[in-house]
Amino acid sequence: MFERLRAKPREWLLMRPPATAEGRWQWLHYRAQQACASGAWPPPPALLQLPGALIIPALDCSHFCLPAPPGLKRYEWPQLFEEYAQQPAEELLVSCLSREAGQLELLVMQREQVQHWLAECGLLGVQITHGWAELQLLPQPEPGHVVRWQCELSLCLKAHSRQWLVWPQVLGERLPQAWRELPAQTLEGDWPSRLARLEQLPSVLEGTRPTRARAQRAPLMNRLQRHLLVGCVVLAACWGAVYLLQSLRQIDVWKAQVTALAGPAKHPQQARVALARVQGEAIDWQVRQQKIVALEQALSAWLQQQPGWSVMSMAFDGKHWRLGLRGNGPRPAPAQWQAIAQVAGAQWMDEAQGAGGQLLLSFDLGEQP
Image (cartoon, rainbow, N blue to C red):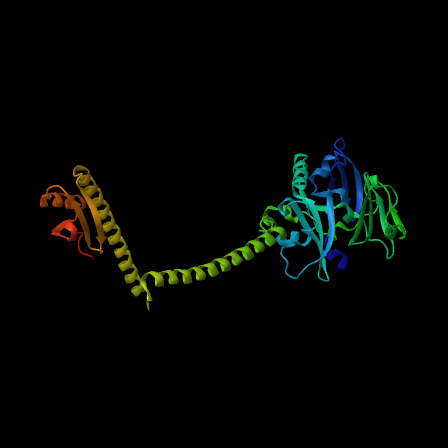
């Protein structure tokens, strides 16, 4: 009764990419937990109706067993091996083979390469539904033993489900000592002569399904980018602190300058009024200086026309510009002084006779504000 309730064993057409550019695809018909037939492409037409399974060559994937915090999302898996990866995480296809004791067993493949193989399978008329790495095909060895299978370009060894070794032929026949000391169970053939129960193995192509594409997105930032971002934030905070300190110091300097110019002030409004007054005085003084320059120029022109006259004294009290002239010629008419005053925008006040025969003139430059 229980035998009838068991699920019917699955049946697949396993497809393995060629090992070399000149090679051909290899296929294997898996049914009832064993290999029924195998060979180079193409298989018998009837087998093309079976669901396909892509076999990832051992040399085209990497196997990791890494500690992982609980609740780690699929798109966060690449963060576990950032130190080993030499390319962006979005270029990798990462699949989880098992979770045990706070560790993740991950298989890492080239996403573009896997997509290329899947496209080729579609062109060959096979619909791929599953995928496994070559090392997953090897059965579990007996305790203390290792399963050994010679592939076309490498030697595959499996001590237990989480301990794999792919030894390329170019490295020679001498294995690492830890693997040489284990008794080996050797498998022969283009495919392992004994296979694991594929029905119980996790597929490594979960990340290639359209419905899972969102879960396979890469993390927003890798470790280096996060470190750079933290460094930028720290530098920005330091710069902000320095700028704030300099601004506070500059405020003290500005306060001292305002006090020196306008005197002490109890509040900003009072300081603003005082600064406006100082600015008005400065503008008024500048205007008066311009008027004095204009008066001097007009007087100089008059003296050139009156060679008998010369300037004996000159004074300015902030409002009135006073001159002392001495000459031998006739006394100038008041209209001449008024003309000189009009040139500078001033007003001629009066003239008087001073000591020693001097002629004293006074020009009013206007009221102070």
